Figure 1 (cartoon, rainbow, N blue to C red):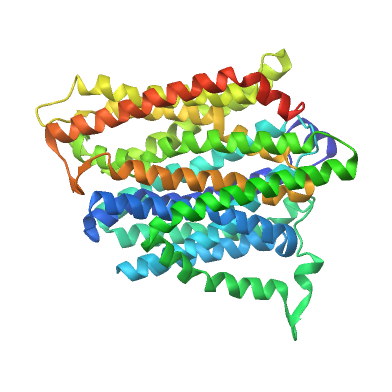
Figure 2: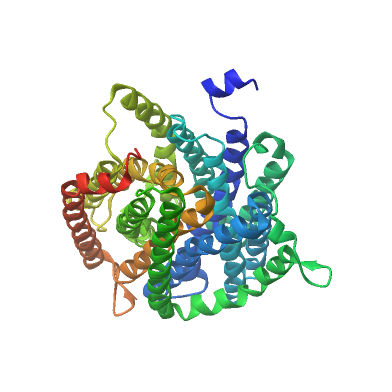
Length: 494
């Protein structure tokens, strides 16, 4: 591709990373889509216990990029980290095929550590394909985000259907095969993103530490030794209350310290403020995703028990209702990608804080729609499937106001030398959100740990979803009021 073509369109490497991430998300969402129902229906866990396990697992999945990003920055380089992570994730899916609770937890551990390497670093490579202040960056990340959701759509249709109809083991196995395909694409097309800085193993990573064994090899072996720790943390998930809070405090201190150091070295007074802004956005992100991530837990169980899923005589599997989200991402993603560029050209592009607030308002509206759906419940106390259709549509448009913009924002706010660390910190906010989301889900459709069905179940679900919606509206209003102070901290980042 010529320089002119690159400037007019997007770098070649974007599509390689698009398809690599697509298959990784096929792997992750294949697991996530089936997990709650697998825990409840196959391993016979109660709603509350299943939701807490789900929250601990997904929380750790998003906490792991803190480690993965930092180790890639200092030792592994981004390419090796992504490949190591993908292979560990595929292995995790295949271990789950053992069919026991112990094998499931070991497989979860491999998926957690693998995702830590893969997720933060492939997003960082995308950011490094673009020069500073490149107006295509937001558009590029939105295109990349569509790839994420093509993978999620395939997972929530194909893996969900295979898992529920032919057996959960078949679904998990299919997800693992998808991950192997993603790694093949990433490696075989490596020349397309070769210009991105930071891909190679660093000098520190090549340094010998035990005879002929270098630091990269030590880290690789150590990564597999962390799997039992993940096993313990999922089982003793109450420990995560303290661990995640401590990690948030540590990461916040680390970001502000890095900002101060950058200011001191360059004689500036912007980086510390930008790191404070990033921490504020992390808190907002936690709020959004703790509620959004009800999709894999309470909303799936709600679909299973209180949603009429029959379509022309065919009963849609409950896990397949999660496909609405990636379907709408793909439907609207290109529109949003073009919209941000056009609004920017017109000088009408909303600030990042306002985009986050508008996203939260739409999330709130989705939950409040369950009140409307309840008015049309049938004699079995099931709301129409259209309730979830429109709920997920609003959740998705809200997501497009927030998530791809957030990924791009991190690469613009962070000093170059801590790009991977900052991306890992951003994923910590997802970790806390998923864990808190599991706690919310644990009280949504059960009473005393036992599922509530029928009229009582419907009323309980809708009551809690309504409360979530109203709280989100208040939070969005506060963000709108704080728009100007937050923009001032960002020092020109749009």
